[in-house]
Length: 203
Image (tube, rainbow, N blue to C red; front, top):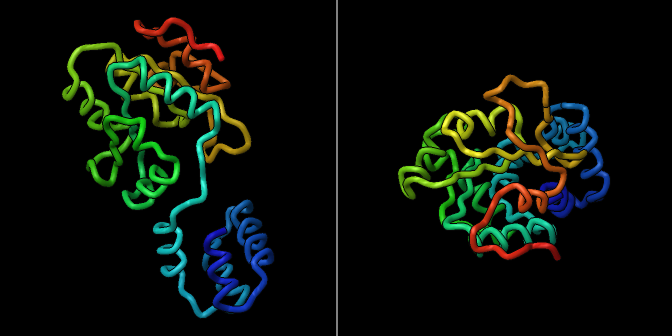
């Protein structure tokens, strides 16, 4: 949407036409940026559109469920961390837009850290930093999220997705790739993880 707005404004074109064209190409697995430039005869290059994509501050927000769960865990767990793959600037902009810096004690972004899932280094960072304890990992990418934490003996929980998921989920996995628990709502993790200082969490 951000790219479509920019292109529409600087070329005096219809935003909706550009946006729908881009989404249509994306859904078909086509090369969206180059195709859009050629289709609308734009003077911008692919690199311009990539830069806009990577640098823009997304208009996104946490769901009420996600906000509730993060607040609960923040108040009842010893520490809470985030491990995410991707480019630093892009991920930092998402984190800022979602207000996630208010919840997490430690944030690991693969480009900054130098390794990405399923490598163990990102996960070992937490055990080395905080020592012995019960560690839990919640994710949704069944191809790489759970391998390392399973190897390290962590509890692993998969949030089963819907049509909004960007990662296809495959539940026909061998033991090391499969999470120990599955939930369809983020709030369900509060019934799995035991928080010593919690006296109930239903709302």
